[in-house]
Image (cartoon, rainbow, N blue to C red; front, side, top):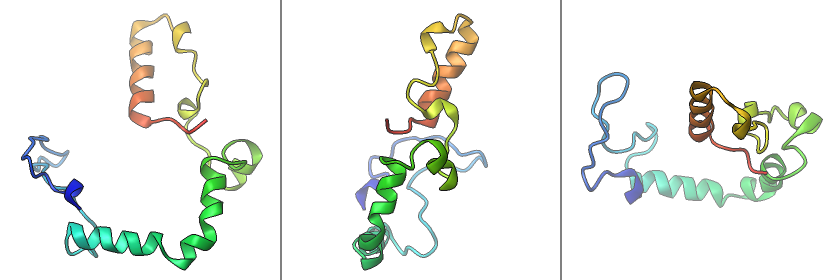
Length: 112
């Protein structure tokens, strides 16, 4: 639960509404960071998750990650997130190169 509290008072600036960013904003059903972690742990250790975890594994690491199976499962991501989808070394325009690198860095990467 400590990861949701800004105990070191780091200045994270303000959000798009101009509000100071401090502790993580938790969903309304969580009374505290401790309550949030407890409820998440209960959910992840539930019988439902145990019975269905293999579906998630197929989406993230398995055959539903790419191609027709991924499309059928609505598991398709922006093309730049896929390893090898962009030849960064082949981009000659510095502005396009920087924009592409920033997009990849900020959007993340789909596991290979």
